[in-house]
Structures are given as structure tokens and as C-alpha cells.
Image (cartoon, rainbow, N blue to C red; front, side, top):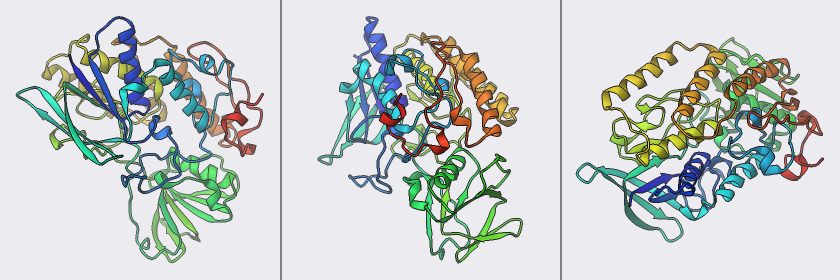
Length: 445
């Protein structure tokens, strides 16, 4: 009986467990599927914890989720095609939910699929090696409750542990002697911590954008965003400003590339994450920067150098859950032999073609189009439920324009579902005025 190991029970791992369960319901023998999750519950990054640094077992904290986080894109752009928001909540809900609502939705499908029994919680994967003679993997895990190590043999391994948990931490002159707090967004938990503070944020992408808004919304005295290449250029509320790159700190004074300076109380590094898989043997390990099509992965999923190893969710992302799902369904079919893979040369040529196409991409709109084409390609290879992909693409474009129009108001807009056509109602309270991010408050009529 074939055995498949899945590393991680976040959105990607749960998507694959769901895909296997759908095949099982169709009468297909999927063999034994075991998912290893080092946290005590499912949800991956969406499994919020107050902890930073180390978890209760002494491992690095996986989660980067923070209180008051709301979806920064329309929920309609990430909807499960086979488990809609309408089905889960029983009524239409606004298009930009907070963290707790999205977590409830993610685990709702997992509960319906009945996949929890396939997950070994509090179990960390410590080693993955491949034996060419037997064509099997040895997967060494540690039970975090009793610290016992065990090694099992699997025919396939699917890495679904994500790539937003190991921070990229640059250093600047003056950091060593800065008298305030310096932290990465990975360790950011509560915007209210910075009430009354003059805050410096380093970065110019989604984390920098959202944490700037969140901290100012919850009382920061001022927020300065230092960019390396180009400003985000939104119409920020008075009190949030963008400046060129930080050159150094002199005590509490931050000095920037244009010669300006200002005094600050804290620094948050929104400087991205590393793909980090220390548990995988180096010759099996994906090594890449954050981009829309990592090298070495056929169809963005199959490790071409050893097609019995697969990775999910390793791309930079506009699409999320509705990209992870077709990736998972494709990975399942590869594992079960329902999809035949081409030879090594053909896989390499396909990867090169996608990488060449990516090299020609310029700007956000072309990036959205590139990932739309990628998801469209995956959908042609799987039996995942259909949804209006072109509508999702248009929603992304509209969303980008909405942010340019109002960076504090875009979350008040409504979008239509690509699965049901339902239009999300307007929120009962404008996002900029809503200080309560609980599920009960959000779902209040």
C-alpha cells in the first residue's frame, strides 16, 4: 500500500488532505496518508499564537499572525470552489474578513472533510532522506510531548510547511546601540503596543503597508516607512509618511538616503522571509528567493530532480487558497499515478518556459496575469471544481485600483463570488473605525 507523508497542516497541507479524501470518496485507494504538524492544532500561519521567538517546546514559533489582522484582499479572490463562504456561514458576509473569520472558514472545510485523524499534531519533522535503491524516503519525526524520535518509510513526501515563518533580518549601522525595540513583522503581535510611539517600518510590500495602517489605527504617534527601491505611493493619512532607504541609526535618530532624519522609538522590519527547510537533505531542498515561479519545480509543484518529492505553496502569492487547491489536487494525482509525468528533459523545458515568461513580467498587473495563467494551467490538469478565474483576475485589478483610491477605505468595498455570484454586503462599520476584529462582531447583522 503506497504511503504519503505531508509536512504541515496549514492551508496547503489541509488542501492536500482534502484532495485525498475526495479521491477516497470516489472509491479510489489512496493508500496511507500521514500529515505531520509541529503545532498542537491545524491552520498553519492562521493558527494564531501570542508567542514569539520559541514555542512551548523550544522550537522557533511558526506563526506570523497578529491581532487585528484583516484580509488585505477580497475574500472572493481566495474562495474554495468546492466549499464556499455562503455554505460555511449560511449567509453572505462582507468581502474583507478579519483573521478569526478566515481561520474559521479554513478549518470548516477540514472538519467537513474529516481529515483530522490523518494528522499527527505536536510532531516535528526532523529529517527527510531518500534511498535510491528502494526508491523510498526515510522521514524522521520527533514527538514534542515525549521527545521521542521515530523514522518511517514513505513512497512520496509533500512539503506543505509554507515559506512565511523564517524571517529575513537585515542589519543596519546603529542597530546594535539603538535604545528602542527592533523586531521583525514575524514577531509583531499587537498594534496597540506602539500607541503613542514614533515608529519606523522598513519595507515596501504588503506587511509594511498593513502594519503601518494597523499601528497608526491603534494609536501610534507617527509611522515612517523607509523603502529601498520605490515608495508604495498610497494616499496615506496624515501621520504616515514614506521616505527613501534607511542608511543608519544614531541613537534614536534614523537617517535616510535623502539626508533627512527623524527620532523614533521602535523599528519593525517588514523585510520578507526565507525559504528554509533544514529538515530536508540538501540535495532534496528547494532553494529559492520569493518569486512567482521557483526554479526546479515542474508545474510549480513537482521537484524535477526527484518527482517523488513535491512542494506546495512555494510561490510568491496573489492567489492563495484557490491556487493551493489545484496544486494539491495535481500533487495528489501525481502521487496516485493518475497523472503521468513527462521525462526529465520535458520537465526542465516546461520549467524554463515559465521562468522565461516570468522574466518578461513587469509591474503588478502583469504579475497578476502571470499567476492567473499559472492557476489556469493547473486547473486544466485536475478535476478540481470550476470557478470563474477571469472574474478573480478582474477582482485583483479592481482591488489594486481601490487601494490607490483609498488605502484606509478599500476594505469597505464589496465583490462578487466567482463560485456563487453572491455579492458581499457592505460591512456594518467602516474598517478604519472598527476596532474589534472578533468573529462575533464581524458577523453581527
